[in-house]
Image (cartoon, rainbow, N blue to C red; front, side):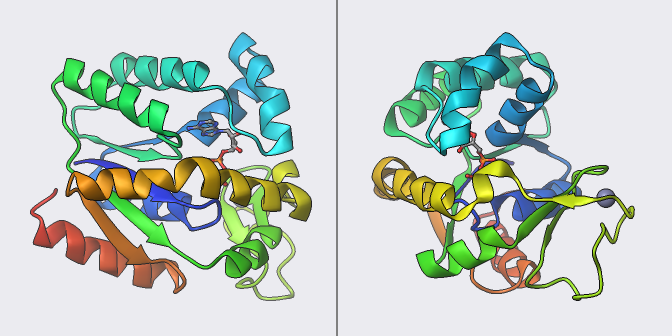
Length: 217
Ligand code: ADP
Ligand code: ZN
């Protein structure tokens, strides 16, 4: 399968991507993760992206497109891929189309995770990541007594860009720059909408129904 996960920050793209890759064995390509990885290793790309990321702004299109293009070529994506956090602007979507055309790998579909903004702010301000294993947790759904990571006991931390003012800015960026992609993909008849306000399992079940219905595997 070759899919794009589209949705506002906090809509659960990362979680659905994990569930989907586990079930279908395709590559999970998260541009946010790729940038954070580059940042941690202080690569040229990471240093170029850092200032934008810290403000909750988008990294310039050419940097993102170059990174995705090389990722799609360098490692095996024979079993398909799930794009998580890309494309995020119309120019990125157009460049992505060109790359896929070149590779002879057209998209099977775009999964939209639909969710209300106030709900997102609550979800994002409560999001925590494990410093050891990278797993993502949410204080809203964790038992109060659990302080560390339930998977490995590691320390939980809040991403710098999950602070409320930065979140508001990321949501505005989504509204202004990414939301237009919804109509763009809808016009091409490959957009599938899902309510993302329920539990991850509920959303995943809806997505599986869509995939089965459209014979995507
Ligand atoms: P979010 O929770 O906002 O979806 P991500 O982990 O996807 O967070 O991305 C974190 C940051 O990385 C973004 O705020 C942005 O600065 C940068 N980034 C990730 N993907 C893209 C992209 N496709 N285009 C531009 N910037 C991106
Ligand atoms: Zn952990």
